[in-house]
Image (cartoon, rainbow, N blue to C red; front, side, top):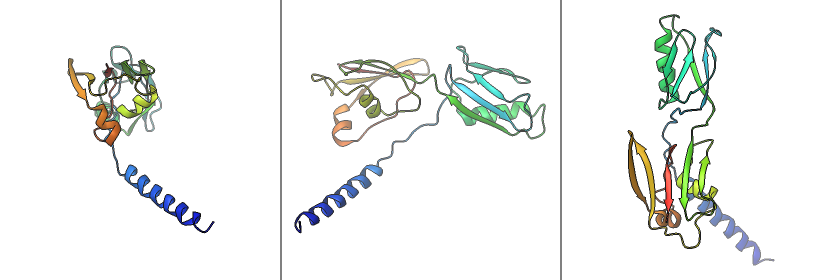
Length: 187
């Protein structure tokens, strides 16, 4: 019993050091961008006739009283708040606008190839490559982790970026946040 106790304390201390190192790894998350089918709650302080929940239509627009139709797809919540505040100044003195995300329905990514559960994944929040890989049950036995490809559309153009999945898995380096519409191909 006397020899076991120091080993237990040592293991606990090693675990604490390892947990600290993992906590130091920070993945930069870009601000959320509004997408098609998202549900937003728009509140204008002391103006309930304008306040409401809205659904982002397939054309990327919402409709609000006084404001009318407005293209919101791709805006951040702060960007939409600023735009609504500017438009409502025509009707109210110093409008106080709050925009909240009620439902994320536009965050779908796709995994193809040698993962255990390939297909479309509807996400409720931003996820990293490693998180999505874990959700898909990991790589299949003969997956070529050195040839993983990320397909992403930027400004309407398809980009293909190699992903060093081996380094991400082994060293925990290079993990990145996926964006709606991203496609990961694992040969």
